Image 1 (cartoon, rainbow, N blue to C red):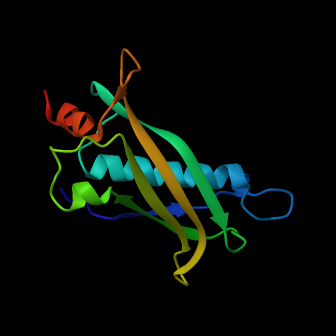
Image 2 (spheres, rainbow, N blue to C red):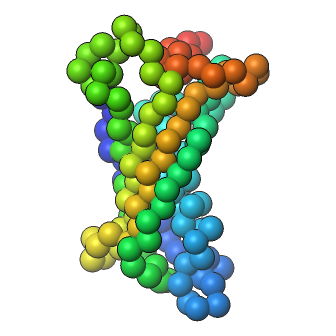
Length: 141
């Protein structure tokens, strides 16, 4: 199972800036969320199916000040090694990691990174589901 890295362009809006003239940290989380939504959409994974993905933790590292500029958000899924080497159906996986990078689009320098843990739940019962069940639910109907 292979998922491509997805890049999207984002534009800092004047309302995204705080009193110091740089992007508010809560807005950075929204930029990363937009990147994850774009990644899901590119891979045909929808929030409207029977299993959904939810963020269980996120760790953001700010490396440089983010000013009024054009940004690039890069999103990549990191699957557990067992999934990557082909035991996809043999060993159920209940968590996946997403690595995101926010770049200055002009200079291509890294401004912030995010390591996001996601888990999968049933849309109605809210019970834990495996990554495999999530993928299968996306392909159904």
